Image (cartoon, rainbow, N blue to C red; front, top):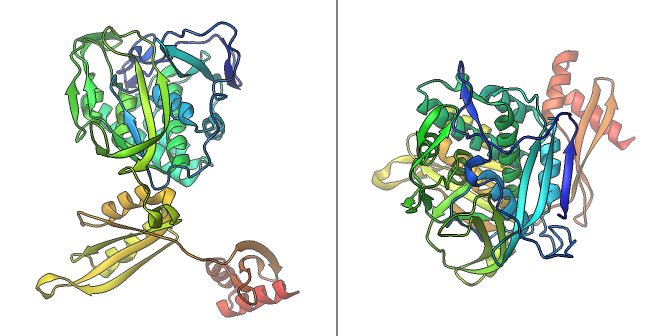
Length: 457
């Protein structure tokens, strides 16, 4: 079997891919023993003599290749975390994106495995987490702290934490417990971390608007370490609050809790089929052979409404704005501060007058297209508004670099803006200057002047 394996050092024998979750005093959660919901990996049928790497069938996509486009999750046979990663890599996201993001977490004792797979006559990709034994239980709070302290890119980190929060809130609701009591059991803990962080890294890499089909719900029951549970699993249903679902007419688990949390966190719309022109297609396979359908997730990248709007396609950034008439100055300042901390390149408030003569504010920000969805959600969270306007824009900007100079008040970072626009502009970082001025008991202007003089030298 040809494929790629990225090993994270550890020891012990490998375990099956499963997503067990647990709470204090319990041995496991909604993950099932053995393969996760039958969605871990489809039976592979390979042509003899084929030795190509799983990614060799197409040119890799570039970062931001999905900006201004639709990424459609065609979940005709459900969704799981590993199927999502497999489908995105098969689409063209470099597997290195997953490997590097997972490696930044500092976890050990497992390998990431990517293989070619076939379902009948259709070729695709299979992703697996091969786990060594002696994996610890990991509580939700510890996992969230791990993600928060990691060196993951801001967009990847924010999305992964959002997915894990949705999953943990579902588990806490099902077990009538608190977030602090939610834990992910042994193998399932590292498995879920890898699936969620890897998927978040792929979605962030593409920067596309995600649309999902309504999710098919299997029926029946399943035996796990909690006992016999009805299908769809209780945690899956809790994760899917607000997500359209349909009866699949089959006795099998088609949507796992991890898959449900991922889709519910990334999809902006749910349609049986969006109006768009397909450009790239990826297939991520599961394990079990289903009686009435291919066990795979089809992921399609395409241009919205069959054509590319030239202005939107050329836009490098987006302006997001919303009108609010019920925010105090303190709340507006807090919201702007949080938006900047979440990755907005700039954020501002403009006084306006709304209907019936009410004084109000427009809160707005500008950001990279890849951060559009994340910051639109942040803008809605920080205000009581029920809508955000999206305006694609492009901007001309000076090339910028950061330097650090030594002064009598300590090292001070400066931002240097250059390019064919006249003399370079040099600006010391004000917060660093203010901190140095407080420590030295001098006016901040003295530190700024010292930093500029040091730069000129």
